[in-house]
Structures are given as C-alpha cells and as structure tokens.
Image (cartoon, rainbow, N blue to C red; front, side, top):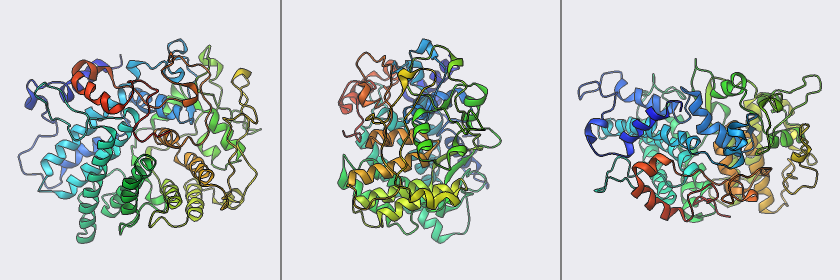
Length: 522
C-alpha cells in the first residue's frame, strides 16, 4: 500500500479526531523557546517543506498519483503505457480509491499544518512570514480545490461538537483565497518598499527572499484565479483581476520571473516516472498539436522515437493496452531540470490576453498580450529565432493522429475532436475563436504542469482533446464530457462523514468524476 497506512494515520491526526487534540497537533518544528532564533529557522523550515509538497518531490510514487496519473494525463500532455489493474484504472475512468487520495493527503499532511504553524507563531510578530505562509497555502490549496471541489480551508483544525470538520464550498474557498492573497500582497508590498533585508533568504527555493518577486507572483496567482471564475462569477472575477493587473509591482513578465521551485539535488519526479519506471510517455494531443504546428519547443518537451526522421509518437488516453511493451517505445519526455515549474511569465501574458477580451482595466491589448505570451515561452526554451515564422503562420493546424499499434484509436482529419485553430492572431475572429487561440497556446506553454492545463481545459474546453476510447465509469462520466473532478477520499468518509455530507450539498451533484466543479460552467 506504499506507506498509505502510515500516511493515513497522520491525516487522522489532522482532520479526523479530537482526542488528545493538542498533543497530536504538536508540530515537529516546534523545538525552540518562544523567541525565534536569529536565523528564522523555526519559521523558514516548515515553509520549505510546504513548497516541496505543493507537488511532492520526496516521494515519486506520491507524485505519480498526486498529479502524473491525474492532471498530466487528463490534460492531454501525457499517457501511461502501463495497463495498471488490467486496464481498469483512472485512465479508463474506473476511478480507484487508493489512487485518489495522495493529492489530499499531501496537502493536509505536509502543507496545511506547516503553514498553520508558521501563521500561528508569526501572527503579530513577523508579518512577512505570515504573509508568505498565506501565499504558499493558496498556491497549494487552489490546486486541491481544482481537483476535488469543496475543501477544508477556513475551517482547518476547527473541530465541531460532533467531531467533524466543515468543508468550504469551492466558491467559499476561492473567496478565501482572494482574501488571503490580498492580505499577503499588502504585507509583502510594505516590506518591499520599506526594507532592504530579506528574511526569507536561506529558505526561499524560488526568489532568494526577494519580496518584490513574491508580490508579482501573488498578483499573477490572483489573476489566474480571477480568470478561473470568470464564467461563473464575472463581477468578482473582474474585481480581483483588475486588482492584480493594477497593483504597483504588477505580474510576472519575463522568463526570469518564472515561479520555479528548486528541488536540486533531487531529480524531477517525471524523470523517474518516465525513464526509470517507463510509466509515462507523450500524449496523443501533444503529438497532434506540436507536430502539426511544427513547434520549435517540441524537442525540449519530448524525445523522438526516430531521431533521423524526427518522428514523435504519443499515446491516446483511455485506450486498450494489452501489455506495457506495446507503447513503451513511444516518445519519452525530454529530461526535465531539477525544479518544479508552477507559474510562468508566459502564462501571465495569456491571462492578460484573456482579460483583455473581457475588457478588464489594465489588461492591455489582447493580440499584443497573446503574441508576447508565445514569445516569452519561446525565450524560456531559447528558440526565439523561430518566433516570427511561427507567430505569423495562418495555415498550420493540428495533424491527424494515427496509432501504429491500433487504428481504432486514430483521429482522422475532419474529426470534431481534432483542433483546427491556427497560430496567427485574427483580429476579426469571434471572441470564442480568440479564446480558443489563447488557450491552445497557453496549454502548450504551461507544460509540464498538467494540473493547471487540465483545469483550464475543463473551464474552456480548449484545446480540443481526444476522448477516451474505453470508459469504465459505468455511466458516471460521460465520454464526450471528459472527467471533471476526483471524488472525495475514502478516509474522509471514514473519519469525517458529517463534514463530507455537508460538503456534498455544495457540490450540487453526486460524488463522482462526472460532476462539474463550481467554476466549471458548461
């Protein structure tokens, strides 16, 4: 069970039990007297662990279930050649309970308790550490909410008389995220303007303690979440988005602003999953779009199966796999660096482009933002020499997909699931076509963060992806609608059933993979 039993014991302490509550919530970092040591280690070390567990890097088997066999596949980025559980698994929509819990357990075992500890210890004494913990908590928990929907956030560690813990609806959680971001931005902006000291240095795995960079990241995250709710809650989205766009320090703008968490000397989990375990390969939509566009980023994302002919092969999601060797020879991922990429400047430009479509103040011009987003992504991979030809191409489209192992998996030209969107901006296109163009390029640029790409696909329907061929959900997930969420974990049903039952009321549908999240408006 891969240490699940031990992990579950830990999560019991966090969310399922009130007996000996003070004892079981004693943080292992609480090793000092009330006064902090001069190096701020008491506050910094827990936040290092929070950063490393936004996507688990210390246990690859956890990372595999937390994101790789979830968002990375559902986004169309990747697919496994492994027929886990005789091909009845999450890839074919037969959602396995023991696959669905790692994201939740990691968040409530390694992120929320550490952030709470720092916030409790720094409140009123060290506002910058308090703000940093707030921001990291939002960075982690919006991803968890985008997987499950309702989450335990504002009620975390608040025990009801019946020993349950309340969930926030996804709307409540998102409003709390915005509130926390606003507070963190205000505090960190004050420090950026009024001190040259960097209290985070020594713990900051991204920006070396630079307050301005953290403000820019918080603004960009605020804009991301505002865009996420723009269909379901447009007034709130505009308010939050314009606040981010018009904040004095602005958002991420250059590749050097990218929010990457340094995990060296540990290798990226995807390197292990792909090369050591042979459990992941290129997804079919990636082959279709990147090859169809003749995209110069392709060799930086995946490796060709035939170097001489530059042949790339992707696996379609949710197909019959008779044996692991059938598709293991398809394209591997290019070797990833020792950092986790969670938010980039190129994404920020695409967020601005979409905001411009909606007329948000401070968003600028949609075409200029879109083209800068593509250029910034090209800069990230040092392929700017090909930018002009790429951005002005109005003929390239996604290529038809052919599976050499099984023609039943093919997607032919003219199939409604095959994207026909081109690259060059068309100022006379409809708003919907402009959105499709923005999101398709954003999807390419966000790689390899499959969780974010899956969220944006659910929100917009772009880029067009290929539905599963085998659907073992028993009717719970409509093939043409794709998977919309992951059910609540079984351990919560066992230890917090009253809380889960209340959460189901806000879910507005059954607890299965076919129920849409709050922001996922059809």
